Image 1 (cartoon, rainbow, N blue to C red):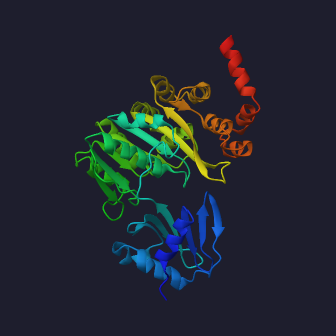
Image 2: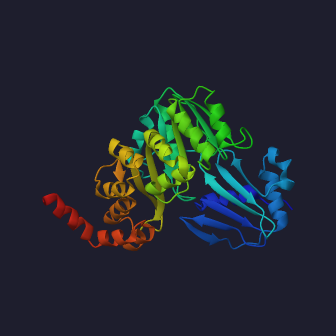
Length: 365
């Protein structure tokens, strides 16, 4: 019997689900506003999973399906939505996860992201990282930034993704989109070939290894603006993660090179609001000013951390500052601010007014 995957996904979209889970021998589940809800229906069978795969899996993967253990691909219901799909083998004979990718690319304002982010699209070279956990909205943020360039610059944008998620319509820019495994073997070679395609801007889906990182840096050093993502927990943590890709003996020279090409690091989380649990972004921003470059180049991370805590400028701010602002606006609770804080002791002090009082006293001295 054919599983009606299109019908199920249409209902999931109507319920405003961001993700749909199909596990063998379990009922389907939906993620709505960050929480998992089980659907009261029949259990998914092994035949159901095979039927869904038969309907959605690209032909390129069907030929080698017997040896596939984990694969990402895109499925589309024309006129409705695109979905990023992951299939993995597990002890229950297979699992499928569908993530919604809308056709419409939202603006920074619609995403409730700082308008300052737009500044990162004005650079002609360098690297901008958007970081965070899986499901934190990194791809959506990047799509918004790429669309700003698309609307405002006569440029060539090349994206290398795993898989291609948002599909752009050429406006002032022209856009070439390539998918791993189907159009290019890996991110490293994707960047290598992109440099031969007359690009101005390159989007690299994720920095996963040393080779990809060094290729991205080389692209930025040769006059290209590069955007990419990292799975990290904070802006300073992202710098340490990048450093960790390099052998210890070469880290000092690498940090000097890296600090000169990074334009900014953004870390984001999606946190539940007081409005029926709807999600809103909390963001940490580290723009590489001359002072920040100096601190990173010389490994002065404690000084950098203090700089971020004391900053009241839109180009440098901590996650705690973002969470506290959301709390003051009545958008999140104290409990949510504490839960998503990267530094809970400081967050507790901020909520009790201690940190603010200290800053005011210092300014008066």
